[in-house]
Image (cartoon, rainbow, N blue to C red):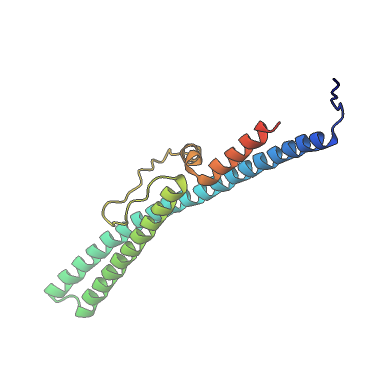
Length: 168
């Protein structure tokens, strides 16, 4: 009885090298995906904050428009103003109310986009209930920590890395 074992098996060495290369590629892909996701979340997070600030400015404009309308009506009632001033003030008020509705819609869309990116369930669009509780101290790292485990591409990249490592 005799049996042999090749000390040098070129095909086996090539398979091992291919598995190592595949692991590096998968690891780089996962790292690039993590960077892309963080960048996307940061943009969406900043967009939510920007729209929220815009809504606050619009609220201030609506308050100002109400005061202008009140003054215009008082002037008209005492004979010191004209009806066109009241109409202009009403027009300004309606324009800013429309801007607020438009900003609220943009805010809801931005919130839904951010929730989707983070991997949280996105509730049905309702103008009265959807609010993101983002404090001024919310960090993108916290959002990334929440988002990464939820993303399907992250699961696929991790599975590929595990498969590559198991073939070593």
